[in-house]
Length: 119
Image (tube, rainbow, N blue to C red):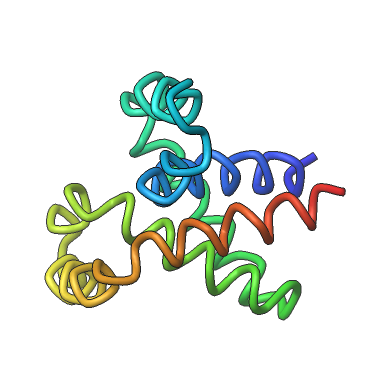
């Protein structure tokens, strides 16, 4: 059950992070833009699940690549919240900002990997 939640959260995170590339795919229907607008209020929850469960699975040495991409996606989605974490918040914000140029790549990789693991 937790793996299912992890996969769904990563699919949603992939849509949020990869929206610029996905927008080009759907043409004028704005399908992905409409989904992203509805998901925006839940960015912190989605990012938290991706980051938290990504660390959990990485520590268990399960799905190492998938977990690493999920952690990167979680960090990108939680940039606005990370600075509030005592002691490590500034370091996490620096990592998140270094990942920012790869936002779309991380999002698309996360979306593809999550769909493959869901199947």
